[in-house]
Length: 61
Image (tube, one colour):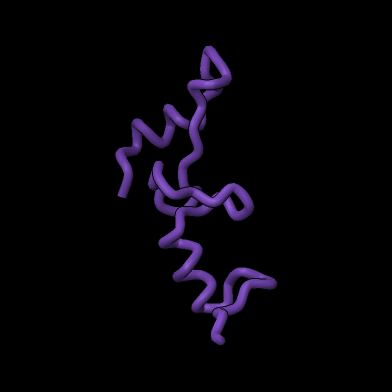
């Protein structure tokens, strides 16, 4: 779980636009965040397996 202070800091508007960064909306992880979902790769995978993301299914070939 991310530090609460860093989650709040990321949510605030930065002084310069390039200083902003994305965090997972569910767990607060700063790395590997998918813009389409706003979630990190771990949360996307868990939610996709549970069927909580519409239009996303487990691929098999």
